[in-house]
Length: 284
Image 1 (cartoon, rainbow, N blue to C red):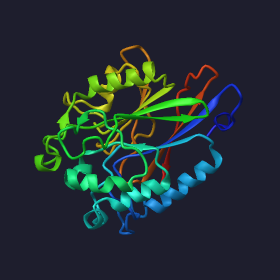
Image 2: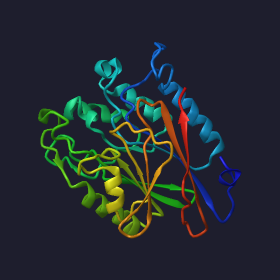
Image 3: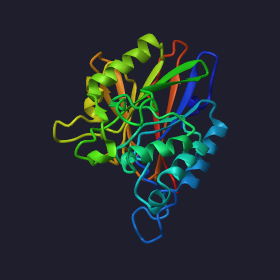
């Protein structure tokens, strides 16, 4: 990483964003069985990497874009308790929900939420007619060295992906209009300097299905979209122009916790962000 991003002066602030998605209960590394991902991933290795980065960076955000649950016997045995406890120990600042986070049903998710010592943000699931009413916020705001960062979540449509009995009377709201409404509130009313969308829509589709790329091009006040669902390994973030003619960055870090995404951003004295410097860190 360029030394310019490591230095911090009175006229600028550096922000280090670490992000994961779709780690699917991969508590331990992949077994040494000759597979493509053998020895990769594992919560302990990820935690050690995060700790080391925090020792050298003043302003670190740690975020997750959903599908924390399902994929190993740890979820089948403990229902997500271990995943949330480990993320809490790692110091996650926020996460959103993926479709597999409903695999234990509404009751299962509700039962595990007390183990998460960080906020879950989701703006386009209306839980008002379910037992999850009041347990989620559309966004959270984090302050780092005078920077005000708004973080909100957008989820994928559950119908067709999740059995109806697992999500009950959850109402799905249009992701693009909801995202624009929340992002506008964060930028204009809450005066956030930077707005991040944690998305589980998926990176891109050949069909007209709403994706991170589609959201980015139709957005108005989002600076960064950290995606999930499609398990996409991006070597470099994608740059798009939104409806206001401003730059939007889209990134995604594969799956199973084998990658820890890192974006380093410099804000000048007027709190204008630079383009992120991206590093995809192998967890091995």
